[in-house]
Image (cartoon, rainbow, N blue to C red; front, side, top):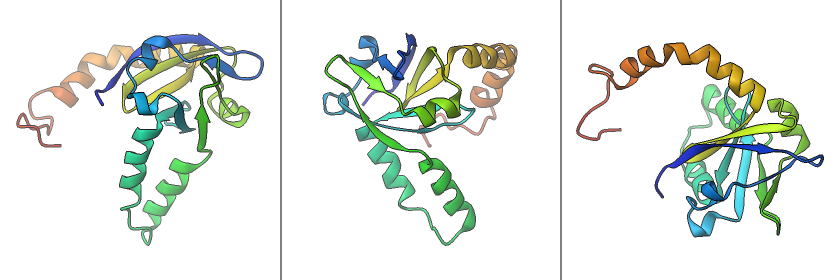
Length: 157
């Protein structure tokens, strides 16, 4: 699968459902368009994985040595609140209330698609995060992508 991309605004109804954006749905592998896994993400957002991508992440996690305390901690925190979701007949996703509360998502959300996941942010929280971090984007780009960043132009991961 090619990396997911895009930013999509959406509104949640009283039950915590949002209409899954068609532009994002078109990017999904056909086998992944119905099933998703959602969990708590970083920076107080939610991470929504197409099921085929969740399975890849899970396979990596299964290789962790769970005799190491930090590995157990990460494994537990990563799976904390994880739940399977699917699209209903109208193409909506119902986000569990406990996860909406964790991320502070109320009426308006922003879906940020990148790589293998879709982050779900409360719109106000995302706008604030952008304001606080956008001034450093050039410096961050230099650190991450610039010469001496540790990246290898020959494609090493």
